[in-house]
Image 1: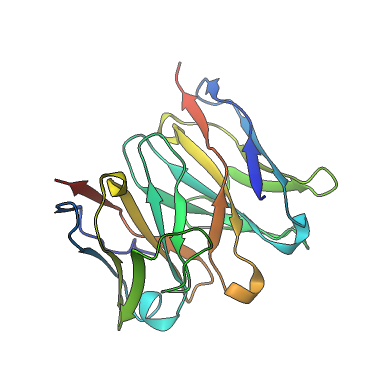
Image 2 (image 1 turned 90 degrees about the horizontal axis):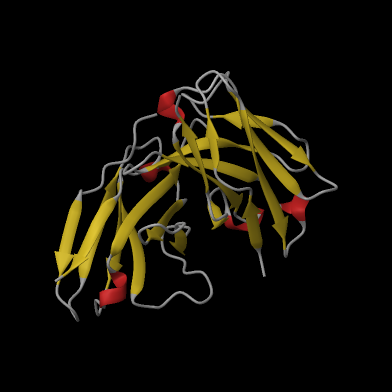
Length: 110
Length: 121
């Protein structure tokens, strides 16, 4: 199972919005509404911020939102803040009854 | 609250074995699968597989078969990852991660703090 494709890096200024894409195939992202997103700060464990494509766990800011179109899922962060600077990973369920991660995206807040 | 507490860092020689533990609290242990994720230094996340906390059946991802064994102590609410015949390329942080509640579909939510396994002579 190949890793999902994410941009290596994205950047934005405080207050702006950014979107991170996560592209797979019809056997994973496109075939199921089981895409999650994680935020990882340096030296820390990842934290779930979106599951089921667009659902936010309790306690996660509504500045984080998720969507999907075809084989590509997207994470949008609005009103960028300095604390949002981190690595972001997507994950999807697959037709092989496995999970597969994206390669990760480094978000820089300028 | 849900907590997954992992065992401490390990330094092992090539060819040795290591067993990482993950003790769960704050939820009913056998309602959620337990997953394992690897992160090599400076690299991304890799899903290694999961183990059912109801049947004890493991499912290893491609690339993590043979030397990688998942197990459970259900009464002790603890999951284990054992790696045999360690190689330098096994050097990584290993995370245990709880599976989502079944009603939410396949996925993973709460993460342990990670265990650094270093393989070096």
